[in-house]
Image (cartoon, rainbow, N blue to C red):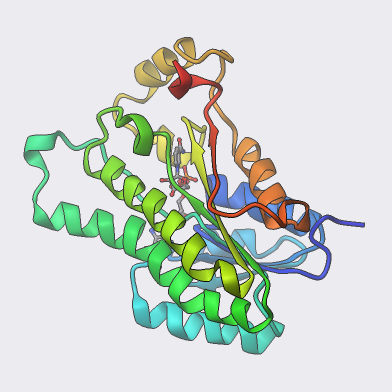
Length: 244
Ligand code: NAD
């Protein structure tokens, strides 16, 4: 028996990194998983897994979300779990960030989860049950020099709290995960990658970087009925880095 048997789960950004790790684990645990991503080539690969369906979605588009949520419900009958994981990052220096940079970052990382909740929560509310997990970042708590990226992840943190209170009475739970540095294509793309990652690992009490499955395991708990009394909560998964 799987911990997510008979559940329908959407994972945004499901074609890479942390999202792909969750797609893998959730499908192994019995869920029908919709991997939603803007990268169609990467989606093809992830859709080859059993119980996984790849669907194109631009999380920054209100219209995309509206038709996507309806299509998932029409095809699979319901939505039990939504993981708002898709995101972009940037190390741009503060003085170089302009309004376009800010808007792009906040559209994908901030409006994306907002619109996901807006369009999916009503389907969950109709069955008086659902679990939404938002992926913020440790940088929402300690900044770490990621500037507008950190700001976008702070938006996710506050949005999660607000949504937990807005939708709680309709049976919809909303919780947030705060990953530390996790080894994915996103972190590999950092310009200072090797040196920075080495330094961060040294500075981490548990003396290693995170892996996608570290986040997936926590998301699995919050997605499952084992966490049925948990909403509005926050879980930092960073090997103790931000506790220092
Ligand atoms: P990743 O780059 O490996 O994967 C991100 C995925 O999101 C990609 O498949 C990409 O195509 C998709 N995506 C980007 N823009 C999209 C859009 N507009 N619509 C739909 N899909 C879109 O990154 P990752 O490291 O797996 O990160 C996943 C999440 O975890 C992100 O929200 C990221 O900010 C967060 N996070 C990552 C780390 C880390 O160290 N890797 C740390 C803290 C938080």
